[in-house]
Amino acid sequence: MIHEVSGDILLTRAQAIAHGVAANDDFKQGLALAIREQWPAMSKDFRHWCHNTNPKAGSVWMWGGTGGHRIVNLLTQDAPPAAGQHPGPAHIEHVNHALRALHQLIEKEGLTSVALPRLATGVGHLNWDDVRPLIEKHLGGLSIPVIVYTEYKQGQQASEPID
Image (cartoon, rainbow, N blue to C red; front, side, top):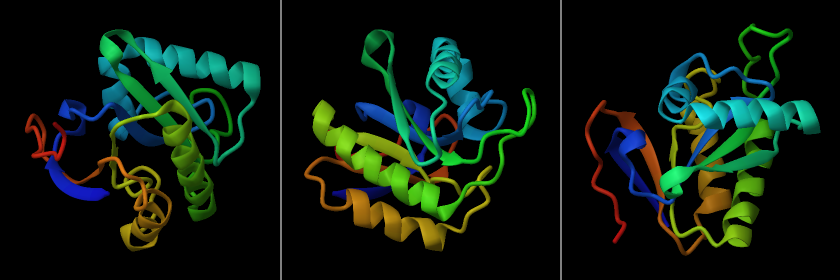
């Protein structure tokens, strides 16, 4: 079930945070930067995974850290053209494939809740009116809380439907 909230996604009580990135992303902007600052090991592990697997856009990778934190990296953007450069734009077909893969990951791993931002609409430059229906299509039928942070409010914990 999808629930739209306002607040700081880093303060979520959801079991996992899902966000959009590019392969070989260096996490220098947007939510990815905030995640890198809070869980620096995740970005290092992500880059290592990318170098070893050469993932394609539309795939997903989940990281589990200390304290039970889980970050799901959805590859919604094209990889940067060279090391140290910004990733390419997000593409709606990458978002579609990544959300389908997220649905499968949630079921396989038995996740009990997931939080995500207005996916690929910030740094990715996509239109929320195009992305929202894909979230509903791929995640709306899940029996777990899917919490979509539609408005960012730094330092404010959202009212989430999580016990």
